[in-house]
Image (cartoon, rainbow, N blue to C red; front, top):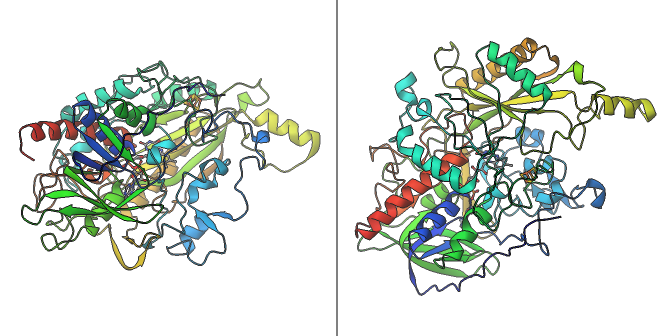
Length: 597
Ligand SMILES: Cc1cc2nc3c(=O)[nH]c(=O)nc-3n(C[C@H](O)[C@H](O)[C@H](O)COP(=O)(O)OP(=O)(O)OC[C@H]3O[C@@H](n4cnc5c(N)ncnc54)[C@H](O)[C@@H]3O)c2cc1C
Ligand code: SF4
């Protein structure tokens, strides 16, 4: 079943002899938002996307959110010839992880969930896209919309505890903006795309303009009440999902059909994804030309002016070399890929890569540390009638509570928990010993009584945490790949220890039987929240971009993805990426009209 009847708009013809007002590289959250804002303001835009288009109509829909496991020949599992990287492989081996693998295709850890067959054409094949250096679990999606096709949709705002973190604890750099600068753009994103949530009036996790919240179930409500006694908050998952509907013919409102967690994406696009939320409406303006299968490898520079004049790319299928011309170039290829592109764009004028006079491109890399968490049993729910608990796009979120009014002795900054409880299509606890009728009864009785949560902590940006270009290894298109120089530091390890302690303390306070406390830290990269490789700042010597994500060195070059973030915060980044991109593109259009670019 799918409620989407509207096919994507017909594509405009790509004219590589034209100089577009702007060329955007990448079509995920950042590139999609840039395309949306600029075309709305009347600019003629060419959007280059390395991956293919993505089918959304009934005939070619790739997301099959409503398919039952028994309707799939392998119950959603991958076909022979595919291999998914495991935690141990990331930990024991060094990248490139697919090197020497006997399997035809190797996928990142993101395919380790049930139903991996549904994401096998969304995630990149690690064999084609190697990287080197220190261990790192890098998850990439190369197709129209990028990672937004499968993102988890937790849509959170940052606060001045994040933008002004240095003022709070002395570490790192403050952002060149404060919450007041970005708040109107968060509002715009909320209204355009829809976000479900519940107001809590927290200074450290500002509320959005929420649509109808998803419901907490019994165990979660109980935990919320108990945490309130500890001065902590449990709020329904703030989901980048429209529950009341938005003015967008490509998207339906959430029907709470319980398939969110099973199949990667939402086939009725209630959950935000960049193609239906941003790109197709931008194409409807008549101002957006999209070229998929276009792998960019260099920002081209006008020798006389030093300004960007376009990009060089190869057709991802034919490998033919091509160029596109633009008065402005906007990089939105994702945090790590945009840094790679800047480093690849070496010229006599920019010998260290474009926009890199500071030497900071690729540096100050940060993200979220994950691993510690807890699973418990709500005994009162054992044997109770079954309820539809996964008929919603998320469970709950416990916002940061460390280092706000208090000062922790072992670490600075904070972490939040994502969690859920209740019935799921694949019941938790089905790995208990036993067989036959007694086993089935046990699984049924306990299925709705489990509750679990895991932490996401802020990783500090450090100049020594960086990526550069590998001097030898190339991807399947002959483009040098990234080499990682990055590992968690003491602050992250101490913070992770504290996550396990507080998770246990909260469950115990709530009277939940603790079954398992997870203390291990997952491999760097696990959070899929890469940030910081071309940070914003006021000083061109220590930052790459100004507050409008505009290169200090090249005034018609903008980098509108998470690479501009000065610190990682512990809140998930996508809503901030889009709010910032909106703000920057409005500024860009103003400057463009004034002839300043
Ligand atoms: C499973 C999963 C769960 C997640 N959960 C959450 C969550 O709950 N909350 C949250 O805030 N975030 C979440 N994220 C992260 C979120 O998806 C990203 O923050 C967001 O997609 C970043 O947007 P982006 O535009 O920077 O990058 P992307 O979405 O990755 O888009 C980049 C695009 O650029 C293209 N590209 C790359 N290189 C080139 C090139 N050389 N030439 C042309 N095109 C290129 C790519 O193909 C891609 O389409 C999750 C991600 C995943 C994978
Ligand atoms: S629960 Fe809502 S957001 Fe999730 S797949 Fe169903 S309709 Fe989409």
